[in-house]
Amino acid sequence: MNEAIVVGVNDSPSSEAAMGWAMRRAATLKLPVQLVHAVDDRWAYDSVGYNEWIRESGINFLAAAKDRAAKMEPTVKVTTDLVSGGAGYALGKRSKKAAMVVIGSGHGWAGGSLTDRALQVAAVARCPVAVIGEHDMTNRKGIVVGVDGSEESTQAVAFAAAEADRQGQELTVLHAFLTPEPWVTRGVPRTNYFEVITEEERVVLAETVAGLADKYPDLVMHQVLDTHTRPAEALLAAGATAQLLVVGSRGRGTFKRLLLGSTAHAVLTKLPCPTIIARISPVKHSDESTT
Image 1 (tube, rainbow, N blue to C red):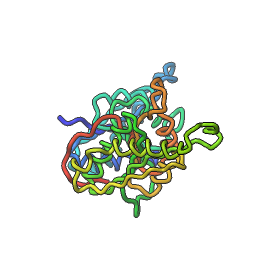
Image 2: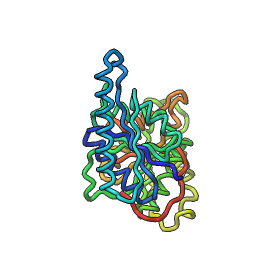
Image 3: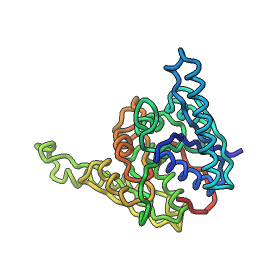
């Protein structure tokens, strides 16, 4: 059986948007969907009746969500999973056997905003994580991926290229960095310091996309080198009109002990469009398009 797309659901509007996004993707890729709803009953241990009410409410919510999902895409097999405790932990655990975890960006989980949970899931997941907001997708097009030469960003480019080719979308590969301020290089003997740095980063960009043209001959790809903008700011700006944004979980400037890089964190916090944190190489699927 194909690995399922796992969707964290609650009663927030962004959760409903996430479920719709996941269902469309599942229909295109012919994958099953598992809807996961967490009930945090850890503080109700001294009230059996209240504990049972929480679980019954969760069961009813999942049943209604499953019915809505089935109406969205009748061909997709949908299962449900009611879990106790923290939603972030539950989704992270299920990511080990999932094709993708999809979560909304709004509020609704007990104990904090869903953005907090999205950051938590993205930090520990073992598969790609899609974070979906309530974006108006009218007139949006193209897929944007951020690169910096790290292994994680190389995985992100591979994922984004496969997505763009499958969807028939143009791919923008964006490498943004700030060149040092003049005072930083004062006294440095090389007069062409900035040119050297820029050329080195241009090579990083070229090496990251090497081979994609041969693998995807019909893919329209744009390479963008931005030497005047911080990576997160550049990605947020590019994502404002994009259909999809893809980033790596960590960058080359991030300590390995950190589970989620600062750029990915900043992007998820402001979320300009549906965003995927890529963690593994994509699996080949059919050429059908998705949204």
